[in-house]
Structures are given as structure tokens and as C-alpha cells.
Image (cartoon, rainbow, N blue to C red):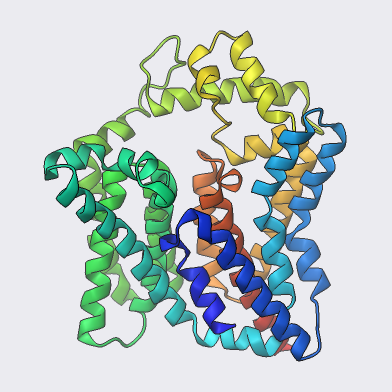
Length: 396
């Protein structure tokens, strides 16, 4: 089972066509171990953490486009797969997981570091000079990397999570070599964060570093924290591409009134999404129809650019409202809130910080509707939720 968890933390460097196989093998390993030692199943854990999937599935009853609905439910599948897998584990196995957390953190950190660096070096030696690669790299990894294609927003999120994991590694007693290795990898991941210039993950990692420092309740972390934050803000201001991305926030306009920027695109999308939500606030439009309804309103409002590119809502909370209305959104918030309460009660810091990180990014991205988003969110959410349960079981 330990090997299976390591494989899951290695997912950033696994080709897209093999990710489902790795997840399936992990599930089979857990199931076989569970059967071998007399199967047990944590029903409460499963029901709570898979509730959003089941409620989303219920919206199929009022979806006209069944084919699209089934396709979307398959995209959401991680929301039921990982709760099922981890519900099969017992207390002894959970204890073993969290004895090895440092190993998992190292694996993920190194995997994300290697993915970024190897891809960049590969394109440097085979396609572009350095200055051109700085401009085109985010496009190359999105559409010209074959089975390793990944949107920069999700790679930015991997960088952010890698940095978060490294903070907990830095709390340990490390050899000089390991300490230097983590610092080098962190500097590299931060550099790639600014190369991708995605506002959500940059803001999220700034907040995460702040909360992590507060959680430690130790003055020795204050000076390193201030140094890192000042550097991050300084880079944001100094680097033209990143600075321009944040400058978009000063003047936000609809597409028919302003420039074609990512911020203005989202502003126009949000206006259309809000109109749809207002028309069906309680139950939404169903998992099979919500995307069609969004495209239809783009056309009605003359937003040809949005319709042509079939933009999603670019806000996970709006998307949940479009799918299942207030009922689905409140269900999602309730699941997160209940787990957050347990995390706070049992000092599960890593889960708290992960939820804050993903929550911030969800305001600008539909991470539950893309493979690179929902797989990692559901895996990390369910894995670290187990830590709260494990501590609670020990306290009894």
C-alpha cells in the first residue's frame, strides 16, 4: 500500500493516458489488502466525502443531454473513487501512511521540480533559444507536449502544493545537502510560478506561507517569512508579464468595452453565469445541460469570442450553482466545512492549508472539471482528511 501512495504522489510526471491506470492499480492494492485482513469500510467517511458526486449525479434526472452528462460525471469520478479507496483503510494502515508523510512530500516535490525543469531544458535544447522559450513555454506545455500536456494553471497549482509540502519538510532536522536541495527546488518552482504568471496560485501561495508562519507560533520563522514575501512581491512588481497580469485588476471591463485580457474574459463570463444562476438558483440546470446553457447565453448576448471558445464558468462555485443550484453548492461547502472543523480541532494544519489554497484558486478556475485538477484535489483532500480521523480515533 505504501508503494501505491508513492505512485499517487508521483502522478505529476505520469503521462495522462497512464494516470487512470495508476489510480486503478492503487485502488486494487488497497482492496486486496482490505480483503486479506478481513474487509472493513468507513461508511461515514465515504458518504460524507463522496456526497458532492452523488448529488451531482442526481441532476441527471433533469438534464436533457444525457451523453454530455455522463461524460461530465466521468470527469467528476475522482470525487467518488478516492473516498471509496480510503474508506477501505483501517487505523493501522492510516498510521503507516502518516509515519511516511515526509517521504510522500519529497516524492511530490521532486516530481513537480523534474517535470518543470526537464520540459524547459528539453525545449531549450530542441526548439527555442532561452529568450523565446520564456515567451512560449506556457503554450508548449499546454498543446505540444503530447501525453504530458498540461494547462499552466494546473502546473502552477502543482508548484504551489510542492512549495507547501516543502515548508513542512523544512521544519525537520535536515542534513545540509537536503536543506540546500529544498531551497534550490523552491526557488525553481517560484521561478516557474512567475513564468506561468497565473494570479490565483501566486496569491494563494502568498497566503499559505503567511498562514503556515502563523501556525508555527515561533518568532524564528518571522524573518525568513518577511524575506520570502518581500521577494515574491518584488518579483511580481519587477517582472513585466506578472506585473501586467495583476495590473489587469485595476481596470476590469466587459469584452465589448475593454481589451481582450484574462481578467476581462472572466468578468464577461461571470456576468453571463450570474444571469443564468439568477434564472434557476435552487436546482441549476443539470450536469448534462449547464455547459450548453452557458454557451447559449454567450450567443444571446453577442459574446462571440466566449461562444467560439466554449468557455466554462472559470469559477468553481458558479459552476456548482449552474449544475445543481444552491443545493449542490451548499452541499460542497458543507463537506468542506465539516472536514475543516475536524482539521482545526485535531490540528491538521496541512489539510487546512490545502483547502485554503484550493479554495482561492476555485474563485478563478473550475478545477473539479479537469483531470489535472479534480484528481489531485480529491486525492489530497481524502488522504489528508484521514489524518483528522486518525488523530480522533487515537484520542478516544
